[in-house]
Amino acid sequence: MFIIFGIIGLIIISVAVWIKSEKRQDLLFIIGGVSLLIYSVSIKDIIFSTLQVVFIISALIEMLKLKKSKR
Image (cartoon, rainbow, N blue to C red; front, side, top):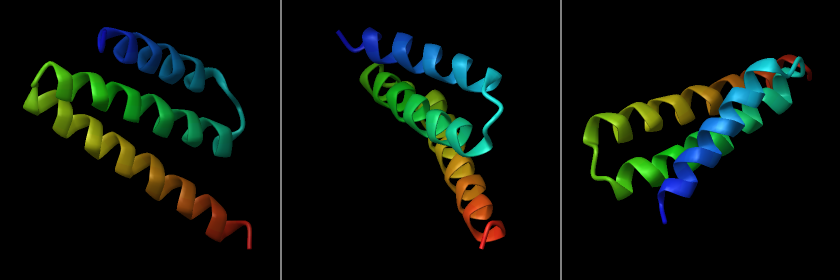
């Protein structure tokens, strides 16, 4: 069942790579990353889970930088 989260996360992140809007791209990276995090926790893969947490945090930081620069 949790494999669906992995598939959806991979598709979302793959689509995000092609989007030109950085704000939307970061949002999709976060959503896809959370989906892959759910999957990686379900398969009990600590390395994959850790990488997903780092990926999500990086996308959040990038999104915050974009918000600050637009002010």
